[in-house]
Amino acid sequence: MINKVVNNIEEALQGVESNMTFMVGGFGLSGIPENAIEALSKKDIFGLICISNNAGVDDFGLGLLLKRKQIKKMISSYVGENAEFERQMLSGELDVDLIPQGSLAERCRAGGAGIPAFFTPAGFGTEVAEGKEVREYNGKPHILETALTADFAFVKAWKGDTAGNLIFKGTARNFNPLMAMAGKITVAEVEELVEAGELDPNQIHTPGIFIQRILQGEKYEKRIEQRTVRIKE
Amino acid sequence: MALDKNQIAQRIAQELQHNTYVNLGIGIPTLVANYIPQGIDIEFQSENGVLGMGPFPFNGEEDPDLINAGKQTITTLPGAVLFDSATSFAMIRGKHVQLTVLGAMEVSENGDIANWKIPGKMVKGMGGAMDLVASADNIIVAMMHTNRQGESKILKRCTLPITGVNCVKKIVTNLAVLEVTQNGFKLLERASGVSVEEIKTVTEADLIIEGEIPEMKL
Image (cartoon, rainbow over all chains, first blue to last red; front, side, top):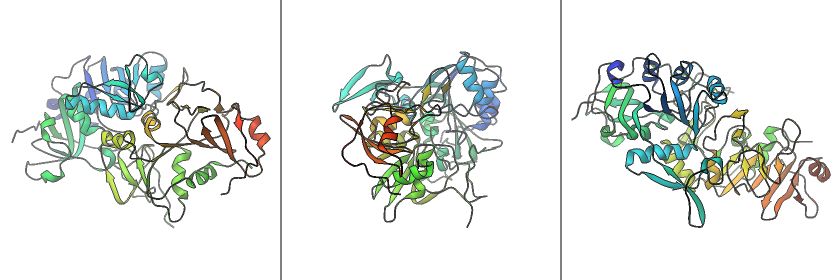
């Protein structure tokens, strides 16, 4: 067993520097690495490129890094929930690359899987296709999308073991397993860290080989963006 | 009488086929789930990683780890399954999801759709919409017939940056049901009490009108 455990978030973030590219898991605020983001937002690192499906909200998630202007470029698919983001983007302070969500997911997966590029129908004929190679397969045009990798990937799982194996819960899985594969150094934070051997190998979603550092997150707020309920009749 | 948002959803629900997988977009499309006809079994897919999505949870039972693509809290039904984003879009791109219902800002007569960006004003991103419209075999648009300024959203050519080309099959608006054909928009149905002339007046694109146009039945 190769032990991946680090003692605290400081140790987990060792080596992060200005101008690096980070992948950050999560969809909306669900499954975001809350502890890593908070610690990053307190570091004096700037000029970051962040690859993340969303950009958090004004005062939570990646919104914390945006507020301190630590991010120079975001690579995302949907950023509608963050007013500060929209302001920085429209004023030109923040560079933004918007990518179809499925292409973003596949580009991360490809990056981790050793596939340098692939063709997809998504985005053909739109702004997204500008400057990209087009090829016809099965009578339909497809555009060439390249793989994404990162200096660090920050992911969050429900349970993990000391070997770095991860199990996710609910829709908090989303981009986390894909980004875990694509980080040169992948930091996994989990709600519950157990000894190797305690998780059933049949049930593991992300094999520990993709994880370099694992720790149990200190606290989880798990904020809900859109609380929608129905009334019991 | 023009339809309200719930009635648009109700009309779209009549298009649901038995034993199919369906992806509902944010807004009016989400409401379609409230009107599934008797005897029709549907599994709803949400692109953030769930198939077999159920209704909203009861008060106090919300789970932050269980949301839909609109970031709303949801529940799962028996048979539901959870997966990562790449698997989710394999279902979509691979045409395993049979029907996509989504909102739009504009649709053109060749089936182009625009719904992700107003240059210089609103840039929220396309989310999964570009992947969905590029692959789904059946795409139905749910939207109001005109925008807030009263201008037609049904156009000869889209004026906004498009989300996908030549993909929309049908449109249900507050005034009409339209089919996108090789020759342009064909008027299939009109809202109860709304005349063909009234629809033509607020539609920038040409309409193919064959015979009597029936009223929508809800």
